[in-house]
Image 1 (cartoon, rainbow over the protein chains, first blue to last red):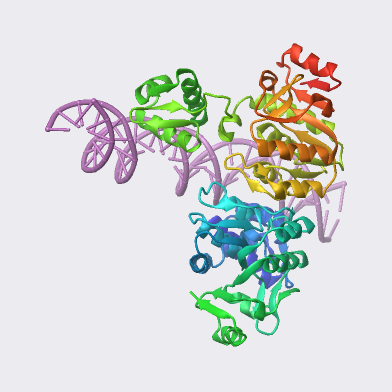
Image 2: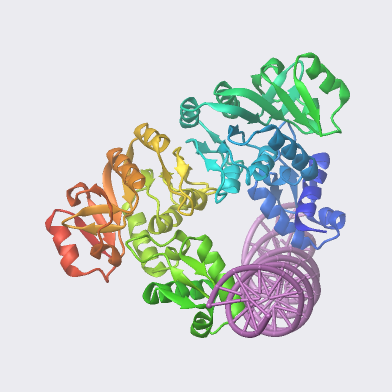
Length: 252
Length: 252
DNA sequence: CATAATGAACAAGGAACATGTTCGATACGT
DNA sequence: ACGTATCGAACATGTTCCTTGTTCATTATG
């Protein structure tokens, strides 16, 4: 079993059982206790769990967002397909503002060899695009949130206000026809709104799981979106409701 | 011989001999021709040299700046000492704007465990500071220059204008009592000036080699500097002249 | 057209990483 | 305060990835 696979299993097991002993986790993963301890130390640093003598307890009980490193490994294949489709929606020469989040990071990778202007809203995406000779990279100012490295704050909003884009590619934590597009973080939501306000059209990206969630911070109603790109496993009821609200839904 | 050591030798040899054959470079480095070809491809991508059939010729003949990857490995020890001294000049709780360049990157590493607010002017320094729990990181907007990843342009200057710092740590390409502080890049020079204008005091960092150079873009006269940190090998004539202009010179 | 350089493909060597084991130190319950 | 269980540092082993060298078919040059 690979390291990341084991981390995922430990995090999942703790989300269900609240807390587990090191011995239980070692049995569950089939590895030694020492390895589990090393994993727990890493996951504790990421804020996934809290150590106590003999075991660990999950910190992801409520509607909180798992940390970046964990989410990046979930549904990678679906995210890549979504990203490829989004890249196909963008024409050469366009200017794009690219939201933070793991799905948008895949979009960044998909845009590396395209002739486009990109303003990424997270350092992860920025790093994915540096050194790409055909991409003109514009960085907004702001304060990178730990782990996520999403840029937020007045500097970010000021940078966005100074530029106009053809397309905004926006990620989300929840997306339903009733509640619209929602995010876990209030500051993030403000940046998403600013990015959309500076763009002619908005493309939202959302894996299937997003359609059954509504997060804390409201960003925009479905009518503000021009297209939503999701994967084929998205529930038809949810996507039909969005389509009825006038959004173009692409399942890839 | 390590890879970076070999790259350095190849670049140095070409700077002296203008152009050399692959066979000559293979003999010089004691490695196979295939390895030299692979090295030349990498260095050509970095803009260090130009390939031609049978060998390569240097592109660093004039007053041009060697690429970031090469400079980072030169005088590492001196840069680390300078960086440690600069970090000691900065008090806990201070806000600092940190210039681009390899020496300032070392300063960023030296500040990782300090309780300070830092706005780095290059993505290299920004990446060195992400994940540091005690550092409040502020990113300016701007366009990262390839390789260097130095942020420049109107967005950078606007971000700097919106904030006030206790200390500006400024790198340079040349520093003399007559010509003042100079840089290779005009856009960089404008950013340096904006950073200094937003700060109460300016600390310049300069390895010994900088005192015998004057680069294209003028940034500031010596009188605008409050302190210069350099290494012990800096020529006394140059540092004395700066001291006479009212600058505190620290040799470490 | 002949010769030399080139770069792709494969193989060997070594460095870096992940994992497991051992053992002294440390924290907890009684 | 004592005994027990947990912890994490240090070492040993296995695995993977990166670097280097060799071979050979292709390509450029005179």
